[in-house]
Image (cartoon, rainbow, N blue to C red):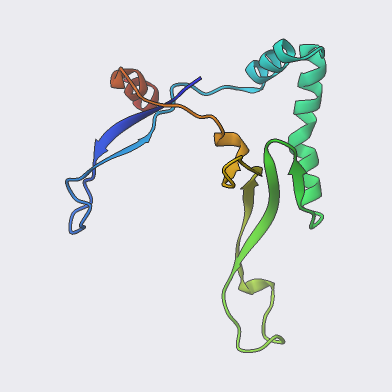
Length: 145
């Protein structure tokens, strides 16, 4: 397994980054619940249909728990919680729900401490990076061309 990246030049004018080269992750395809269930079946003794049933309930269950002011931790993946953005009020009494401007989801990836005492995110552990050999493959996925 390897993570592909592609190089690009910054086009942000009036910036010290303008004209400099950077890299971004190249997404080569989108994987859905069926592909996840198949891969999980290949790695364990559960049947694809059982895995699909569990994965289908995961989203609504996590949503319900988050909306009940709970933090949801999934081993080897991370923890989810809801977050809000607010505008300030001059006093506690003046603060109302109208001061809440948006609601979002915060994700904190699972981490472990490596042998050399560094914190490593579980989802990036052992990742190998390679430049995408064919940029047109990604361009056609992104633009449909």
